Length: 217
Image (cartoon, rainbow, N blue to C red; front, side, top):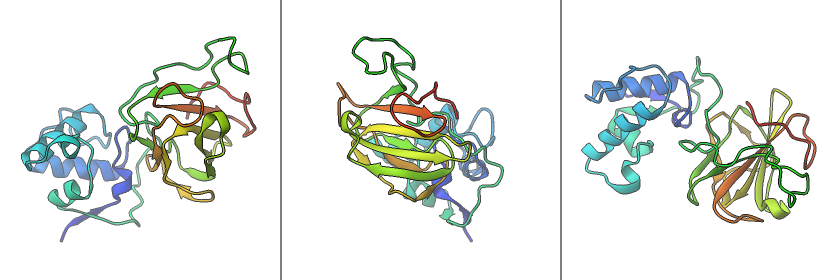
């Protein structure tokens, strides 16, 4: 009988017991992870996953170190949406897995309506996955963001709303409950954007433009 995990919990930058089970399956197949099965999906695990995928004869995007249904199946892991992933942190390290901040919060420029950059930018190719940074509920998901283009608002238990802007596509609808690490859309350049990136805002009490703080989660 196959071991069951919740596939949606196994995301780059996440920490979860499902990731730990996934790591143990990789190690059992002979792919070393220097720090062992810690439950954290970082660069070591991504390298091991990519090596496993290449061993299957897969190339290109199919061997990028990020698992899909075929990778899980080859490791003998079945999907169970009821799996709670107990022991996870409920958080991820980046809203665009594998990509760091490319332009910081708070930079002052005269052309910004608020006088400063109201979020953090994550430059990444169009179509890269954008994920929920914490468990929460989708407050809005539409193409009516004006200069923000296609955008999504994520309301979480700490009272904040996290705003995802310039998306090329959206994977969720208003009212949907999501878990940290779950895809909510794809990187794009809709609205007022000079190139593909995610503009990410932290609105500590909800609110509109400028009611922000430096993003934390």
